[in-house]
Structure formats: structure tokens, C-alpha cells
Amino acid sequence: MKAAIVVFPGTNREVDMKDAFERAGASAVMAWHGDAEVPDCDLIVLPGGFAYGDYLRCGAMAAHSPIMKDVVKKANAGQPVLGVCNGFQILIEARLLPGALLKNASLAFVCRDVHLRLDHAIKPLTGNLVEGDVIRVPVAHGDGNYFADVETLKRLEGEGRIAFRYVAGPGEAESRANPNGSTADIAGIVNEKGNVLGMMPHPEDATGPRQQSLDAVPLFAGIVEALS
Amino acid sequence: MKARVHITLKHGVLDPQGKAIGHALGSLGFEGVGDVRQGKVIELELAETDEARARAEVEQMCQKLLANTVIENYAIELQA
Image (cartoon, rainbow over the protein chains, first blue to last red):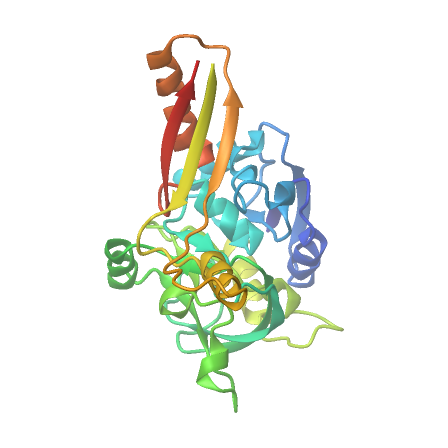
């Protein structure tokens, strides 16, 4: 399997993402935001960071980068796309995913481990995780507070498109589970076809040595198996 | 022609920054301040001289980039 990781000015999690895919047995190439096309690949990844310094709104400028036309075209044609953190914000601004990501309710940048429950397994992007699985992964963001109008939320719920929710970990207070105030504890959603997944937490940073959790290993292993 | 675009959060969208500003005003002794909402203003210099065309153009800019219409409203003000 080959992943193409899109790098914007201000992206900073591309190497973590590459490492996670390589550890899972895939190859990964970087794709520059100014290019007109994404290189041939099985999966497009928009990693985390602060593309364009988060000017105007997080992800707003990046969503109009030259390469994004091709990302949107390929996503609409059914190619799997994974957006993490700033990548999720960019997918939303590119209108590949509904809703908006607002400033964290606490106004603070949150950088800590959270627990995610997989509510809906969506192949191939949720990998080998099984519905109900709870994994510990880090978050690091200032604008991860998911918002959508009532109609959109109903649709997301009804169509089983809320993949990940924040939940309390073992011994953790309920009030601490949701790090950013997101509606209905939403951490990650998919598009209608299920081929585009956006999530705020960083599963790539729960896959290897010197990371505090290995809980996201099945996620990457499953994606790589399915797309190889 | 100059355009000034006012971007504000829609009703029902949480505004934690506005809330923090409200709290700060309260602690400075300004009493009687109710809800506070924060927005932004973007000023543009346009080559277009026709008001109708300028408005249509800025409208497009708002739809495509300047505002996120999921959460934000915008109002366009033109000055010759």
C-alpha cells in the first residue's frame, strides 16, 4: 500500500504520519500543496499542523491550495482520504465533510491523551478496530470543538457516520473525557460514502516506540491490509 | 472602490472568546454587559468601480473563502 501525505506550509505532523504507515508495512510519499496532482496512491492523508498559520480560519487557506482540487476530485470519486487534526479542519473547509471546528470551549490549546470509542466501523479507514473498542491517543489542538446544526447532526447520527467519540478512560472523570467541548462528544466523522474520515486526535502518535500508547496499531494495520 | 466585510458568528454558535471578553469586562467593573459576541472585519480595495458588480464579486469572495457559512454570517459595506 502507498500513502500520499499532503504537506502544506505549516504542516508539522507529516513525519509522524509517514512513520506510522511505514511501521504498518506501507510506503509513504510526501506531496507538496502547490502541485496540481496527488501522486498515484491508495490513500491520501492530510496530516496535522498549522497550515498557513491558521490564518482566517483553521484550514481555510489550505483548502484552496492547488493540490486540493485534485484531492476533492479523487475523494468524490471514492478514493480513501484520511484527515487528522489540521487535516480534519482542511477537509471541513474543503466541504468534503460537514460542520465546522470551533475554538475549544476552554479557549486553551489542549495537548494530552484522550480516550476514543469507535462507534461505527467504517472500512477501510477505521482499520481493524472493532465497534466499542476504546483507544488512548493524544490530542494537540486549539480548534477542535466540532459543531454542526441540528439537521446535520441528525443525519450524521442516523447514517452511522460518527466514527469516533470521546469517552472517559479508566478512572477518568466524565467531565474530563471531552477535551474541547465538541457537540455530542464527536471526535471523528466520515462523509456519506464513508471514504473520507476526519478526526481531531492523533492516532499516528499511538503506534510506535517512545509513544505513550500503541492503541492505534490495529487502525493502521487494518488500513494497510485492506488497501494492499 | 473599498469594501468592508463584517463577519459574525451565527446565533446558536458558541463563542467562547466573546464569553471571555464579557467576563473580562465584568471584572473591570463594567456592569450591565449582557451577551458579548466577537467577529471580524476584512477591508478590501477593489479595482471594480461599478457598485453592483463589486457587491456581486465580494459576495462570491465571502461564499468561497472569507466566511464559513456553516457558522458565520457576513455583511458587505461598500464605499466609493
